[in-house]
Image (cartoon, rainbow, N blue to C red; front, side, top):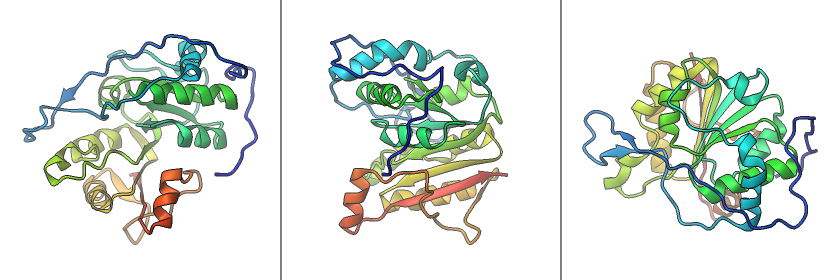
Amino acid sequence: MQEHQEHTDPGAAPSLAGEPSPAAATAAEANATGAPAGVPFPKTIKSFVRRAGRTTTGQAKAFELLGPRFVLPYRAAPLDLTEAFGAPGPVVLEIGFGMGDATAHIAALMPETHFLCCEVHEPGVGALLKQVGERGLSNIRILQHDAVEVIDHMLPHGVLAGVHIFFPDPWHKTKHNKRRLIQPPLVAKLAARLAPGGYLHCATDWEPYAEQMLEVLGAEPLLRNRQLAGGYAERPAYRPETKFERRGLRLGHGVWDLVFERI
């Protein structure tokens, strides 16, 4: 990952430098959404899996200082994106940002683009908020809520310039494949919310899931593969390699990127 010059402006987040003190962080409970027709299990489909983890003191301090500005409340009503970010601009939705390293990297590379980021894992939200403060980022907003409900209730059609879904849970066992995030109902929702020319970028390190992604995205009538010959894309320059990804590549494991465009 290359180093970047910090982007600063009068509206940027305050620095978190110095010894942080303990602070309690409040997490919003993510609600389940109904399963698509014809899918008997699970009874509900979520865009996330709850993971064990402890919020560190630094993450809790970031919640305390930066949460009120950068964490948006979930409401079952359309979100005014210009108001949420404080300025007009293209908006990229990110679903499941983990600990936020790639998100902060990309946001620093693209300061004129707004990033609306969904993640329910509290340490991950705290970690991204900490990077927002340390890097002086102002173009990130976080919804600590199930992304499917955010899409359904907060995002009107045609408002997104892009969607990022990097390394979603592959649900390796065949009997669990139906729990995978990239399935026709969700892809149809995302395609409808992309503006013409907007893109959907997925990445996975599990080849059977990559094959499913390619099939599902290719079957969505509102999308076309940016690879004119079909198949997988080269990793776009803006997506950094993760430490896990670099280790996997050294061991001969593959990583597959898919970039589809809204017609």
